[in-house]
Amino acid sequence: MALTGTRKLLNEVIFGTDTPAGKYFDVFLIWTILFSVGLVMLASVQSWAVRHGSTFVTLEWFFTALFTVEYLTRIYCATDRRAYIFSFYGVVDLLAILPSYLALIFTGATYLMVIRLLRVLRIFRILKLVRYLRDANLLVRSLWQVRRRILVFYASVLVICIIFGSVMFIVEGPKHGFTSIPISIYWTIVTITTVGFGDITPHTPLGQTIASLTMLIGYSIIAVPTGIVTAELAHELGRDKSLARCANCGRAGHDTDSEYCKHCGYKLEDLDPPTEAS
Image (cartoon, rainbow, N blue to C red):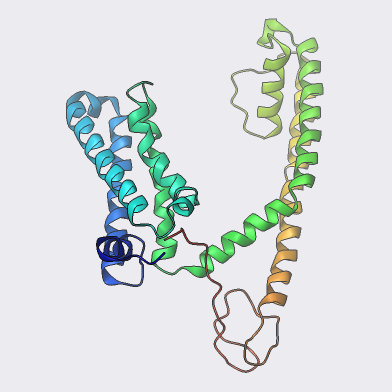
């Protein structure tokens, strides 16, 4: 239904990006979000928390109240309220204010306010960075297409970790820090991913030999998921080129970041990015 009066004005300011007021509002909102998240980070520093604890609490509740009013105002002036509430940005807007209220019940929940950073994703919509969104969608599509292959790969790696962890538990035992099979599996995962924290290390010659083999396996398999995703990315890039068709001459095969047709010079139309309900 068409909006009128105050709702229409608020909708143009809060949801609009083509008007100066809408852009100023969104830029102000992004800076406010960044400031509030920075405040949460500073509050986690013990020395700052001791000296400025009351100031941090006051400012956190100020920002929470501000974002709560903004969220309720968005619901009030949205063209389709249900669509906004259950949209990506609608859910993020709600999650941005919940931690402060949850902190009244669960200690430490305040630090979850860093979720507010997700709201900064609006900068792609504000600055019309369509190509960045298109590239992000390309990556998401590629990962989704190879999800089964990646799942099979990680399941295989998990089986290897369980086998090697069990063997190390038998060879090294509690005496050298391998107090249980789960702890030994943890060591195997840390070793096979080449992280190597060093909190648990094998001491026997046989254990060190197995550890060396585990490291070599880690280097061997680390490139597998990269190859799978890279191959799918190449496929999706080729698909995108075939879909990018000029509206003037009808010829396809353009790069995803092309602005003009390489055959006739006609300006290519940008694909509209996904937006929140307004």
